[in-house]
Image (cartoon, rainbow, N blue to C red; front, side, top):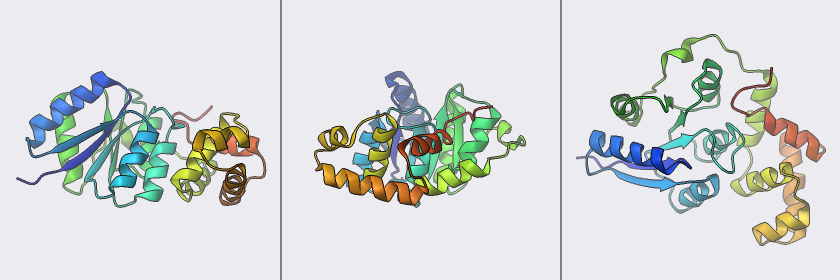
Length: 216
């Protein structure tokens, strides 16, 4: 039997266990399932190995701003299909997941059978979307521009950007990442250039474009 290698990225142990159960039952003992609980852990696993068959990504992960984790994955590892999983099931959320490059969306209210069917379909090279993905929801040009800019960042630049948006100073970021302050300054300069912004406030506003449900 074909062995699949799947990364489960979710910060809720109970839901990770439910996914483990559903996938083990649906794919058999040959499937290798690895769990991570944050974007940082996810990046570490992807740095070690890039030929995962699938990433199941929770929308609200520690270290992510809404869809920023998805955008980062699609930019850095375009060969790995990503299926979003979330308790937020509104059409706006589902459609944004599709627009930002996911291969599917599994609402957390789904039955084990639906989870199994969705995952198997994506592993076979197809996509899987719930009915609300057909609703007419448009993505703003600002959100599309934000997505394109963020997709061009390296994982380290993305980490620096999230810390900038959390209000950390360059020297604090340098300490957190164990790099020099000059390195952080160089990252910030490169980030601003890629995103087309000039200030930390503008960068934070751009990241907000990736939040799960756009502000009215």
